[in-house]
Length: 278
Image 1 (cartoon, rainbow, N blue to C red):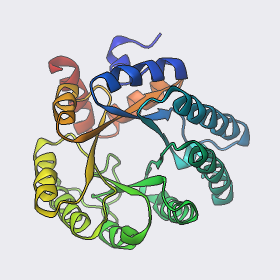
Image 2 (cartoon, rainbow, N blue to C red):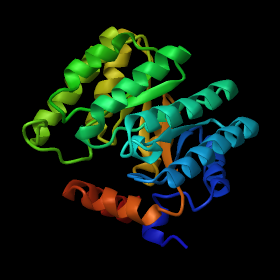
Image 3 (cartoon, rainbow, N blue to C red):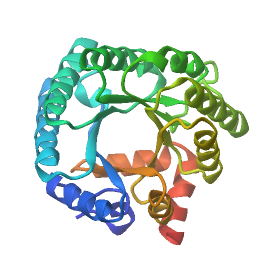
């Protein structure tokens, strides 16, 4: 059983529980990005098992006609074993999803995985002509160049501030500077991207900035937020904008919950505030 403080952020142990949560979200006009919890595998068996479950999840989503897609982690698909393993498993999942019209997001992990993740995204996105998305982190110094690189790649890009704590030589640590970078990245995307923009933020100021950019440019975008965080705001935003909730599930909920809560003090405060205030 998932305890109350965690089940606010995790949809359950099974795919059925996750899809029931998605059904309830869809009734509120919120769509879902479903993620099977798991990461940093160094053996092939768990990689193969999770990849197979993702392919079954794709079939379940397509068969249910729910408004949902999936999101995978590179280290879950074998990146820690080798880039060839990751690319092979990712391609198989994206191919299966493309056949059924289900979108696939590739999460971004710590800064050491950025090159491999972006390379894999660009390869599969160009092969499929879309149907796949990737995440970029505003706190990394390299991200402006990455966003320019991705401007003509078919697919979507999720813009986040960055939940990890990279070293100072590769990342900004000051919150105001990260906010500045986030705004700059959004400005570039709304001016140079042909849609495919996902604003992954719970910060009201950033969401307001994104909607202003949308109104100025007319460029399509979507809002992405986590399960259990500012859900009332998600429902309100969904009345006017395309809103997606990140819905994790699976037996590995404990490591997900504690890592997300403890990797930065801001995350812990945010989780506790979400529980206390709704």
